[in-house]
Length: 86
Image (tube, rainbow, N blue to C red; front, side):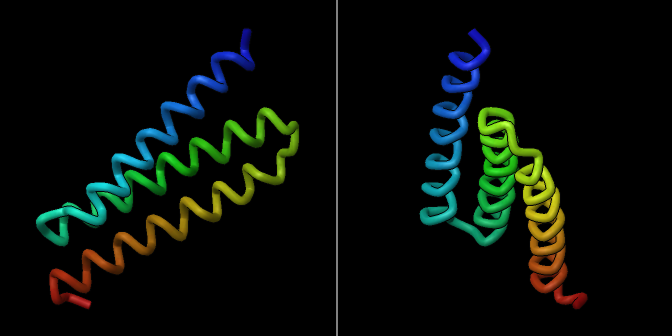
């Protein structure tokens, strides 16, 4: 039962990544693209967490944490650059 729910959630997360990718490519402004990029990385972190649970390997959680930190720093740096305060 748990594996079925996790499989359904993987499909939903992959759909959200695809929709965010569409917004990232088509976004009318740079700020829409930044928000879509942030949404994609958050969804990917959730996907890594589910894969970690399904495979039974905790090392993937460390990868998700590092990926989240790098994503956060990337969004902050891009926002500061666009604000012209970097």
